[in-house]
Image (cartoon, rainbow, N blue to C red; front, side, top):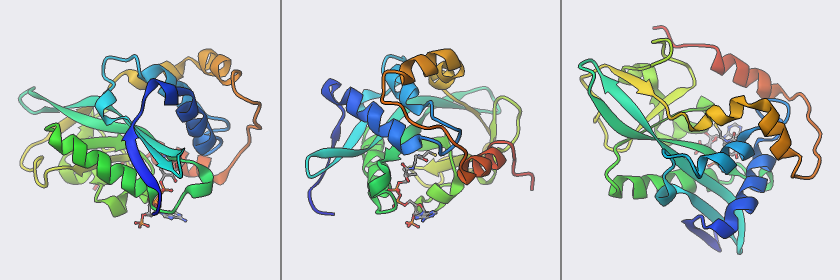
Length: 217
Ligand SMILES: CC(C)(COP(=O)(O)OP(=O)(O)OC[C@H]1O[C@@H](n2cnc3c(N)ncnc32)[C@H](O)[C@@H]1OP(=O)(O)O)[C@@H](O)C(=O)NCCC(=O)NCCS
């Protein structure tokens, strides 16, 4: 882990981070990717938290990043609690599975705790997160506001252990990612990058299964 620096993203890094995000997500969840457009748009969304937008440099080159938005949990009495949701989180393909993702999560969680946050919830492939202490939303009684289900991909990390115990919660995500529903805008933005082949990968089917399933008991 020599020559590693984690620091806040600055405006100078914006395009580099978008390029890296495109590389990391390309064809992983769908043919092509929309996450670089999400990164581009989220920085001006009111739920974006710039104090938690970190880049990881190795030998002076950015090879990974993590970004957060606000999200909310509502309890049975309708009381809302502000929480965090990270994403995108990515590491350039050449350096994946070498613990850089772990470092980005752990260091940003530390800063999040200092800022007073005690919960992070996000959608993701459980395989990437269970070893980091994330648990199924079902175990923490957190259902998804849209349908009241416990999505398989909805994963909870308590930054303060036990903070969600004893209540039922509803997860309310930020609207920041809604921009990606505009497929024409995603395509237009993607044209500003070098052409890249869209193709099928098995990870897309895995993602489909996670996205469309829930934990029921
Ligand atoms: C997901 C991602 C950020 C993880 O970062 P990383 O630096 O590659 O991952 P790490 O080395 O920190 O390992 C993360 C965990 O993934 C799992 N993992 C590691 N190698 C794996 C492999 N070959 N196959 C499947 N899972 C593996 C393990 O649970 C690992 O934790 P552990 O080794 O402590 O048990 C990175 O791979 C990435 O950018 N992927 C593409 C974009 C993406 O999917 N982002 C996340 C959106 S949900």
